[in-house]
Length: 343
Ligand code: SAH
Image (cartoon, rainbow, N blue to C red; front, side, top):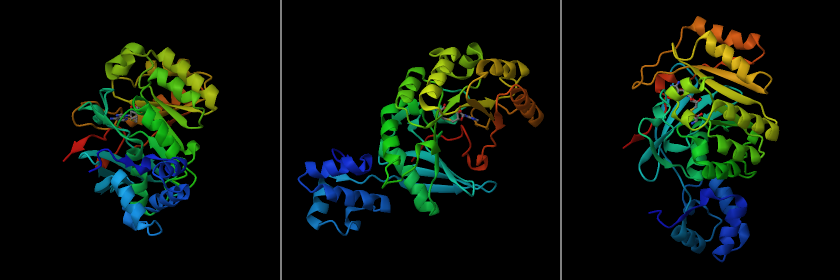
């Protein structure tokens, strides 16, 4: 149905104007169509100020690009909701909406599956199926807005997939989501999380966008990190830290280090002390995430007192640290619980 056709949601307003020109139309039609798309038009027939002949022409060469809401699960314990969306090829992706009252944050997926292989994460259990197109990343936000009738203000690229392993599409997505007449979400309200693909962190820094970088550290020791994160075989922690410093230098943004606490694996004083040494003097912040349950894995959380002891060591040594209470674990929507499904 969509073979050889272009997705209009993959285009900025300027690109849509160019596209209309390229099919022999006036550029202002591009702006009109752009505006319809962001008003939520689902078909060309919804666009009632576009002549019928042009609507038919568009139908032949393009499609708008809509993912389909398959299921929404509302958490009973938190103000959050998990969405399952079906893509045109039948794959299912997951998206999570968190309502903090004064802001709505959406956790979006970037790939169907993931090839990074982190041992504690559900998204990677079946490997990478495919990258998401820019519009498929974008449309998750549009569909959440339609469902909640509220404006999404903040984004975290922390759903399934590794954004720096789908960097071209992610870059395009950043352009689209920032469009003035589109979703208009400011870069400062976006956080990209990566397991540490070092060369791509440099490329990302060179874009010089004020996007927040979050780095999944999970161990301050290379050898230990390798046991839980295969990507650590490719990149050393020292090189990750250098890349993060470069990111700070280029963007002036504080980097977040994510640290999932796993009982008996990475939760002792030895690790806390090493983190202090590693991050001393850096414009950063540590986010401690008690590991969330993934059925196929037998990792457990440390006891609460352990978690706060760990945080206190960092804090006492001037490393700002917070404990992230994951929302939505009752609906499988917490960090690391998003997984691939299919019909
Ligand atoms: N691929 C990116 C983004 C995905 S996950 C990355 O690796 O950063 C977002 C965060 O959740 C990462 O820090 C990830 O390591 C963490 N995470 C994965 N599984 C988890 C689990 N079971 N419990 C807690 N955090 C988890």
